[in-house]
Length: 329
Image 1 (cartoon, rainbow, N blue to C red):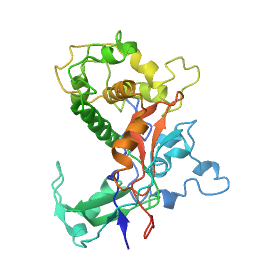
Image 2 (cartoon, rainbow, N blue to C red):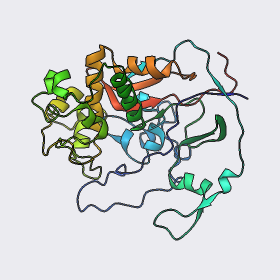
Image 3 (spheres, helix red, strand yellow):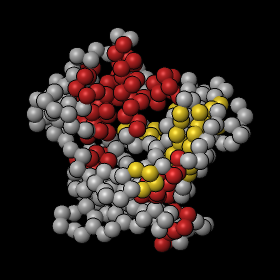
Image 4 (tube, rainbow, N blue to C red):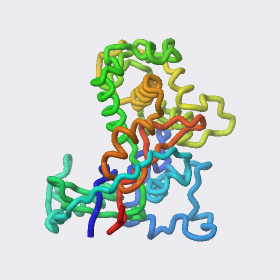
């Protein structure tokens, strides 16, 4: 049985902040373990229609609350518009298998723990949805849990940043982008924002001094404000904030000189994608398709989540990571 060359699968189903207890002073309950939160066992979205107790919706934000995320992370295109990243017409590339049964029995001691655990136990501890391990071009390990399967797509989250940054470095190598040039040179709309005098290198290195944080446990943290602007999360009644990614980015100010320190900020990658689209005249979906997706020999298309203006979310992608057994191309 053949498998086919694919981009890396997202390993962990995210747990942080999905219990809904974000407010300061609010008690956070111990989350359900992997078995108790299994979406198949719970029966999310089963029925025609599903009963109200098993229904997951975008409008109420339940698509991004745990344990519903055990289902929605493998079905995100049902909640948010997407743009296709076509795989092209090339033949899917076969990957040989050399599976190792001993991997599940490997033991290690997690950081901060006095107890050892097996690799198999760690997958449950991390709420793993799917994992594939390649060694020297061969598949040595492949597992799926919950509703994820070899034919289902999974939300890729910030794995996407690596693709965006890699495309940017190829453009720099080709002389299309100047890593020392400031953002305002390429995108005049951002000249008066906190990004205006940041260089492309600052974006790539995550060293901009823009006033923004990703404190996931705070309900009104800038990361969640951005998610409401770009349509990844529903907006509360009476919402008067920005309604697109670009509108949000233009409103960010600067709080310190660029280049002082590393600080992980998803908006850096969003601005980088805006710059790339501006200088190439192509959407990020087109760039990813031309430079990666239709060259890798993947079996399926991938998709970018998009906002109300059709702008890709450069930090989240629905990954077509798994082929069908014995598929023919």
